[in-house]
Image 1 (cartoon, helix red, strand yellow):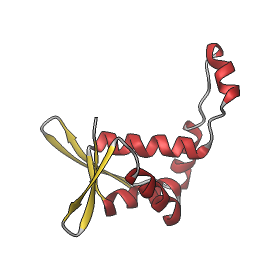
Image 2 (cartoon, one colour; image 1 turned 180 degrees about the vertical axis):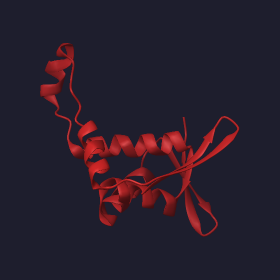
Image 3 (tube, one colour; image 1 turned 30 degrees about the vertical axis):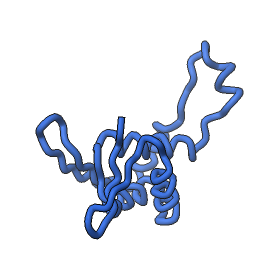
Length: 115
């Protein structure tokens, strides 16, 4: 299950997606990046690996949501990676990302994307 919360303009968005193993497999297949011929030399210099792809998806998830609580974000990252440990590693990486601000939201931290 993947939960996305945020807003589109002034409209609040709270979306829950239920995905089975086949859905996750198709999503993973979409992460396979194909490089155009013009940038083939750059692609051979630095191959795209799954960690880089997950990191980009993690940043995009927070950027699109705008702000997420730590538990909500962790739940989405666990669903994305398939493991609690991998989700927690991505949360730690977000804490040190220059584009992310982490503030105290009472009992839980709030992760906010800053432009």
